[in-house]
Image (cartoon, rainbow, N blue to C red; front, top):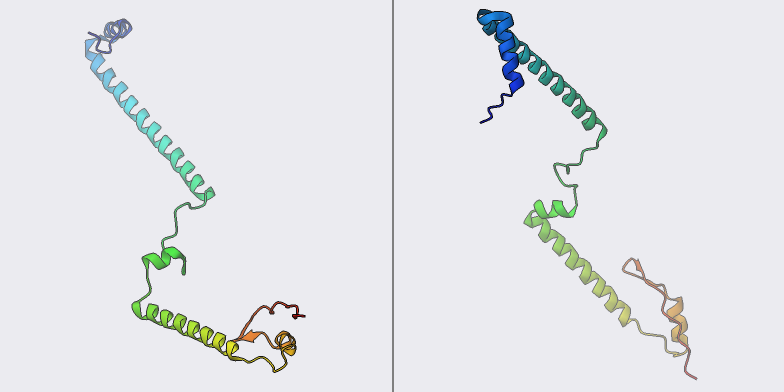
Length: 148
């Protein structure tokens, strides 16, 4: 079985035993252990200091990738996660219904306007009539050739 000891390790152990003797060998082992522990601690401290410096430099140079805490006001996410109160929704629906009713009323008023008595003057009157209905400009009516 191999317990991590090689022939060289055993040779070095016996050489140290012969050079320092059995009385000094435990004290030397403690000193080597303290030295190795201190070296490991200094190495870990140095590594953590370097890593913290690298992290601080990376966080300063990179923009924040995470999304903002709250979605922008008026965005789809804001409307999904923070819906308006029912009163505000009802008011918006009423306003949309009123706008639609006003638009249909304006269209009905335009349809009720009777053309002039002269059938040939009707296209000319339609061209010269203002094209503003309920505050909105509409496109001019197409020109139609009179029947011969």
